[in-house]
Image (cartoon, rainbow, N blue to C red; front, side, top):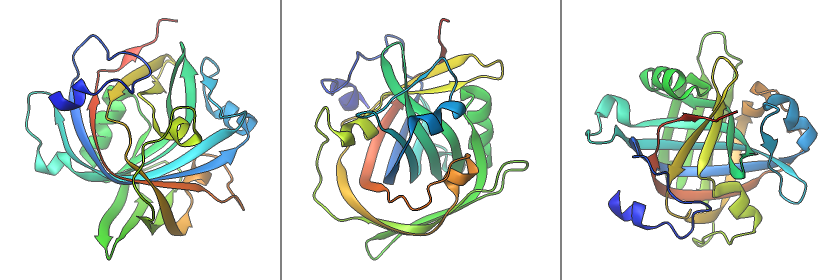
Length: 249
């Protein structure tokens, strides 16, 4: 992680002054993004956060991947807790001139990780029955939400990279959609929380996806009928996480 911390020129703001608390590795990510009107997103995001748009266009993302090496700083990864698939539904917001991610949902294939993330980070995690495997160059992915009382959400399909690796250029749509260095959420009292992260620039590739079933956006209250997604793939990203902080409002 020390090498990761030395690579900071691409960041939009300096690293947080306090110490990081968690490390993770993300693998085989599909960034599937749909253009949506800002007005469609606005009722689902706290008013204190501005919807971040690209040339006036809002975006909704569905991002399946798998995690490994999840550990607290100074501790080893624990096999039964450190590796599992994850799937998030997201859009993009800004607070205090810091653009970040707002998650409508995060499904994970580890019940303990879900409980910890909900309690500590106040993120909308849900338990799910999930699988992720590499077969003949395709990532075969399956997720079915099993969380009691939650809206049903399913993603079934496969995806793969189809182009050369590239780094998104500042000011491009690809950069807007992927180069995010914090997340936002809200606690039970509605207070906004920011979680800072750090990683190297994304090693992106164009992607192809065949989604047999995708109800993840509908589960979050959105309709994507007839709209084709913009697709990108990333093989791996090493990520460092800082403790969540409530915004001073």
